Amino acid sequence: MMRQVDQQAKAGFEAPSEALEGWRFRSSPRARRLSARVHLDGRVEIVLPRGTTAAAVEAFIARHRRWIDSRVAERRALDPAPFPPSRIDLPAFGQHWRLHLAGGSGAPRVTALGTGLLSLRGAGDRGAMVGALREWLRAHCREPMGARLGELAQQHGFAYSAVHLRCQRTRWGSCSRRGVISLNVCAAFQPAPVLDYLLLHELAHTRHMNHSVEYWQTVESVCPGWRTLDRELTGGWRHVPSWLFS
Ligand SMILES: [Zn+2]
Image 1 (cartoon, rainbow, N blue to C red):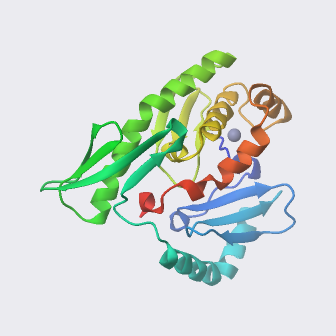
Image 2: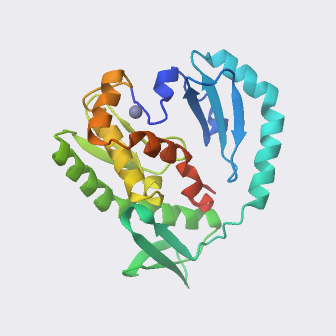
């Protein structure tokens, strides 16, 4: 059983089907009814009041699907993010990379030519190029994210068994009962304090596999600004370049 930053576990609800990939389901104790929000980048967020059943969510989506799909199409048509991007900024590490298109043949591949300069070589369609960039991002984030996780664990006395990096649009991170922490590389596009919060959020799950009062007390003790940072992380998808999932 995984626990996610967005507290899907608390809602006892998982996204109903593959077709909704990229949709986000957020439980909100303050919400009084189901609602849908289409973000500027075309992402869809469904807000669930406490105790919402999967059947109620499915009925809600069925009722509003046409409206949501048309808004998503509108947003995507306005999406200005160019591809390939001319640069990739990773604020979490204070890094800025320029991307040089080197051309040539063969499958697309990305290499770092030096500090701040990436080269995208080879030929292929957009999907293949995005794949190469995602692969680079995942490999590149391993060291700084892993190192920071280790640092924070040591500083606050948490123990975890392994760390996996993923690139996905649905969750920021999770922690298994065995102490395996999964992190979304999209966190590299967030400010450094937001990445730290994500790491501490997952580390705190090594002590409490839930979002109980005790869990949040642990978070509070290691990250007093967690409330603001949690909100920033929730809205953090807007910092993730849309080409990454195109
Ligand atoms: Zn959590």
